[in-house]
Amino acid sequence: MNVPSNKITVRFAPSPTGLLHVGNARTAIVNALFARKMGGRFLLRIDDTDAARSTKAFEEGIFRDLEWLGVKHDLSDRQMNRLKVYSTAFYQLQAAGRMYPCFENEAELERQRSLARAMKKPPIYDRSALKLTDAQRTQYESEGRAPHWRFKLSRQKVRWNDLIRGPVEIDTATMSDPVLVREDGAFLYTLPSVADDVDFAISHIIRGEDHVTNTAAQIEIFEALGAKPPQFAHHPLLVGSGGEALSKRLGSLSLESLRQDGIEPMAVAAYLAKIGTSDAIEPRLTLDELAREFDFAKIGRAPAHFDSEELNMLNARTLHLLPYDAARLQPLGISESLWQAIRPNLSRIGDAAILAQLVTGPVTPVIEDAGLAAKAAALLPPEPWDETTWGAWTAAVAAQTGAKGRGLFHPLRLALTGRGDGPELKKLLPLIGRTKALARLEGKTA
Ligand code: GLU
Image (cartoon, rainbow, N blue to C red; front, top):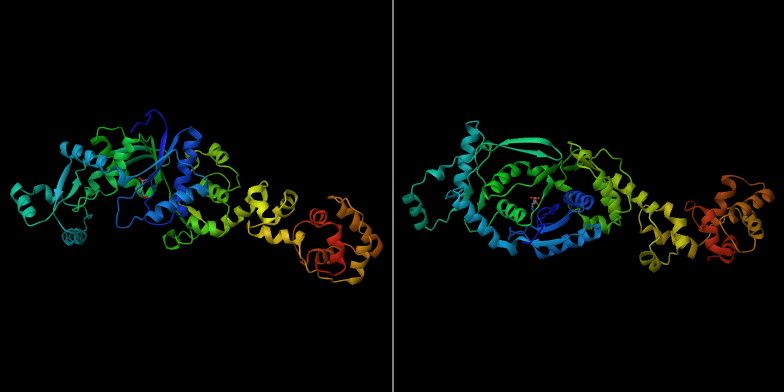
């Protein structure tokens, strides 16, 4: 792999075993913002070594969802393309005396673990496979038992300075030697991840704190491969608003369902960039803005609370700032001035077409006060109209009828739009135009 090793390179490494949800999207966003801020590169790595659970459809979903979110990758690869690299790394570890074959099956391992628990000891693998004689190994193999391979941890303290958690120290004596290769020869995640991180010259591994223990083992693997471990940043996980694990709601919290729900990608991005940080949760229109504001030091140590209501609110606030996007809005028949009029009332982009109809019609007016409506119709000024027309016209209607406040505005709104609430009438009126306004004040659908 020809990657400049002096450059900041991050990776986002989802497994294509499900839809991307807000939890892993947050990891993607944090990686993307850091890379953007530092002028670094972003590798999208598909961790598909779990062949039984990985699917092409989920892989495609990851690319689609990241594109929707605006997270661009500079390069991408998938682990199943790179098995040779992992074999080389495996042989290197083996030559360094760090790999050993084990023959226990799952039932035997479970028996060992429950024995340890019964004796109030941590369920750590007891390394009995290290004591096997050559004869015993040959015997197992002749019985057709294939080994799985464990990495021999140093059983020493591994230390790193985590960019979010500060100094971390983990004694690998408190861990089981990780299985790197299964009995069917398949690589588990741990070694391929390190081999790739070395090969792609990853400078920063940014991921959830559920990987902290993995990091201790992986740092030992980096070193055993003769590589300098990258820097690490482990962010606290996302939990529900009541502190519950998100795992049960992941379906509804997938990016795909948020997209179908009509949530703006920038609302999702800003929300995921800001929750659990010392920054306020506020709308942002570009990842560049979020990147400028990004700092590991702002990320707190406590779990971040994901609240769908808060996301909905941020979505509305995002729409209220969203500039006119002709490619998206013209097909809905929404002009720039109509967009300016309805934007402050949107909570979902899908509402735009409904609100636009208040202008374009057909609107069936509601005539609450026929006398007032008739006088108002007679007082409609000639066009051209602009945003001052509403004020001048309603002042004239007030002067002639004595109606004021809600008693004036509410019946006019009902007549002009058929609804009791909606966007500001001073903006809507010039868009509705004299012909339609007159017809509606006369009770005609227009
Ligand atoms: N595929 C792993 C996961 O989704 C990647 C973890 C990592 O970032 O190293 O948990």
